[in-house]
Length: 546
Image: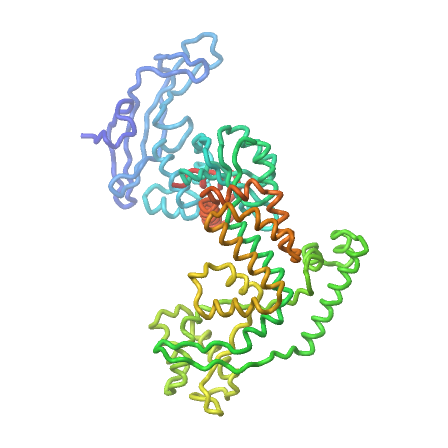
């Protein structure tokens, strides 16, 4: 008895017999069509006159861990329409297989889903494991043949850019913030492209976006009735940039704060390690010469700007990037080069290493094994490098344990306080900071009156944004506009140009957080595609990926 449940359409096909090739794990089904008539693909007229028979071989879904192939006997028909240019046509099997196809529709749909979920290369391996083998090129073609659903017009739209090729070409992602689904991808981030999409999809009421002028202009052209909302994260980012420009003029003073009277390090048992004494880092002769050259370029750029030259002309004459020229012109004082401070995966385990080393009786390899048991994910080299640096800072020979020659415990020099870290401390929520961080902010305030004013302006604006305070917004703008700080005056002027969207950001609860998350998901899919992330293919995966 032939199992009819194996057939794609038991109403149109009839199973005759089957064979199983056990060594190759392959099942062959001999099947014939039972349709009495078929429709001519040219004139759409039905015909029942049989011309001849022929065989088609179709791959189908696997069954009981066996690959399945349909050996299908179908017919050719005479066209009954004498005016039709097609005299003979082959039998069509709608819903079973497309004309000239080598696989059933249900297998093609399944393989297309594998391609959407796993991509080409990984999908090829997965389909082989599932007994429906297909090449990566075939999976990509099946993805491209998939028809995406019609994009519904969202009421609340999130707009953001994403890098097709970072630093060169960018696209735009559109997200329905109510359903948290990607609506569409646009091939660039031009205002005309966004405006055209909005005109084709009328009905958008709220548009959440970053502070890029192109999106503001495109939203105004395409949906003038929509309420634009500036993203709060970007507002705080721009605020941090304004504060950082003020702090960059006092880099040396900030560095001295971290080198004088540092706090002791607390060990796991509650005891403390005395901090290092105050030290002053002396610049080498090479560092001083490089700083002198940078300072000379800085002065020359500002002199040329005072003579009326444009940024582009200055950059061309001096061989500098326009961003560097703009940085020199807008800086209140000479911008010192910032030291690189990077977080190490060894950081949570340094207190344990110092404590165990002072107790003596264990070497670097033993210390490495101990912190491995505490969860350290790194290698031995990082531990050895840290211990060598610790000995060097304390003036000890290469393999000396225990205490320094003066009897004081080992200490580790603190990281210098950079404008970036100071900005992060100032704009952090106070309830998330520790007591020593709050004390450090007070010390930063005392560096200069301009710094104190900048911190007051930054913290008050961050508070009104986070707490959605509308009444202090306009007075804050007036205060920033009248301040002696160029970076905050520029920040306030930018808010004035985008006043309605910024005020809506304070008033409404919508933000671009969900849009940023969808950009992160898009990046994951793009990297997963191993270089086969052409825009049309990536768009299909983003829209159809569950």
